[in-house]
Amino acid sequence: MPNAEKVATVAELTERFQTSSGAVLANYRGLTVAQLAELRHALGEQATFAVVKNTLTKIAATEAGYADQIGSLLNGPSAIAFVRGDVVEAAKGLRDFAKANPALEIKGGVNDGKSMTPAEIERLADLESRDVLLAMLAGAMKASMANAAATMAALPTQMARLAAALEAKRTAEEGAPAPSETENSIPNGDEAAGAGAQAAEDPQATTTDSTED
Image 1: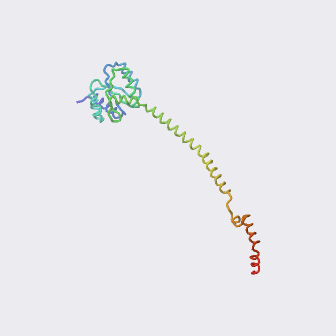
Image 2: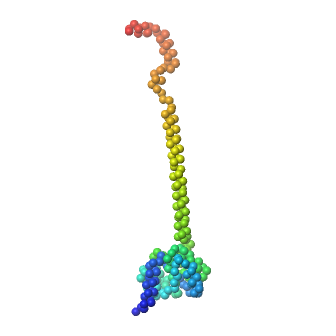
Image 3: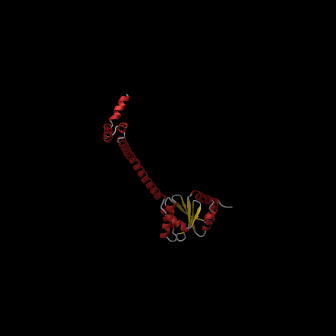
């Protein structure tokens, strides 16, 4: 019959698994109490680091639905970093501490329900943090909005120039002289001279026309 302390420990671990965005398991053998305190301080608000008992942790992992992801990692001295902040920042903190303190061996972990190998945690630590990515996104959006604002500001000027060009074209087309009926009915100088010469040569035609009237 499990005692109340073990039941409470399992319940607490189960809740941590369920409420954390990720968990990283490590072998802490060889670390001093002072080094463990230093690691907790290095992780800050990103994660809580706790030494756990494998048997109780396996029960908690099973209840939380993580038995397949971390069950095989629970051997030897075990400690778990339960991530409650940025998982990338937590991975960076663990990686950097492990480099400075080789006694800390990262076994693997789980992130968003998916298991992670030590190599995957290392790659995760190489990514930009969420705050950096958000800052980059905000900068890109700000630049896009500035470009859009500049384009919108230039539209009135461009429209005005287009309207002026269309008006100038229309005015030019309306001002061009078109042939009139009067111009078409008046003979030019050569035609008038030819008609006069024909009348002079054929006076009979004029006389006949007047006689018939």
